[in-house]
Length: 381
Image (cartoon, rainbow, N blue to C red; front, top):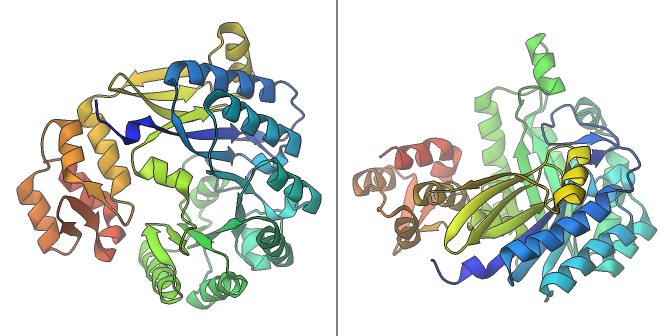
C-alpha cells in the first residue's frame, strides 16, 4: 500500500438540479424541482462513506452540480456539519458553484456563515450577445454585480470563462479577461467550448449551425489567455486554471494529484483506496434511483469497480500531467509495477513537450497544447 496521501480524502457533493439546462452541458443534471428527499439521502450516504473509508484527513468539500446554489444555506450547513461529525474538519477549502442570476446577498452571507469559504462563479462571459448564445440566464451587468458581491463576502473566489464560441474574436476574449483582471478575482478557470454528443449544441451543428470556432483559432485563443493571465501575475498551475498565490483549487488538486475522493449525490463519481486496492465508484444516476437505493440498502453506489495497478497509474499520469507540479516517476512505477518507457519519455522531452526535473516530469506549454497525444504516446509504450 502506498503511504501518505492515501489518508487524504476530498468530499464531492453533487446537487443535480438546474433552473435551466445549458445547451452545451452534458453533465448529469435535471430541471429544478422541489425535492425534500435528496438532502436526507445525501446525509445518509455520507455515513455509509465513513463506514467504507474509515478515518481520514478531509482536505476539501466541494458542492457541484447541477446548480448547488439552489440549495438553501441550512442544507449547505447540514452537509458540512455531517462531514465534521463523521470525520472532523480542520482549516480546509469548502467551495460551492453558483450562477450570477441566482445571486442573493443574504443567502451568500448565510453560506459563508455556514462554513463556505470559496465561491466558484459561472460567469462564462460579460458580453450580453455571448451569454445569450450560450443559453445563460444572466447578462453582463448581472455577471459583474455577482462577481463584486462574491469578492465582498468570500475569502476566495473563482470565475469561469468560456472561449471558442462561434463569432468570438480575440478582442472580445480580451475584453472578458480585462474585466476579470479589473475585479482582481484571485482564481480564473478558462474552458474551451467543446460540443458534446447529445447536447443541444450538437444537434444544432448537425443542422449546419456552427456553435464553436475552428480548432486552430481556439488554440490561438488559449495561447492568448495563457499569455495575458501569466503576464498579469497568475500562476498557470493547471491546463485550464490560473491562480494568485494561496488561491488554487484544493479540491480539484486532489483529483489531479490522484488522491482519494468520495462522490455523494446522483451520478457522482468517486475514487477510494481500501487496503491498497483503488476502486472507482459511481452513484445511482437519477435522483429517484439514488434516494431509493439509500433507503433500501444504505448505500447509493451503483457501480464499484476495482482498478488494476496499471489503470491506477494511467489515471495518475493523465491527471497529473495537467498540473504544473507534474507526476512522480517513482509513484507511477510503484502503481504500474513498471517504469514509463525511457525511449518515449526522452523523445517527448527532446521534442519540447515534457520537462524532467529529478523524479518529476511535467508538461511544457507546448505539451499542454497536445496533452492528449502526449499521454497517449506514453501509455501505449
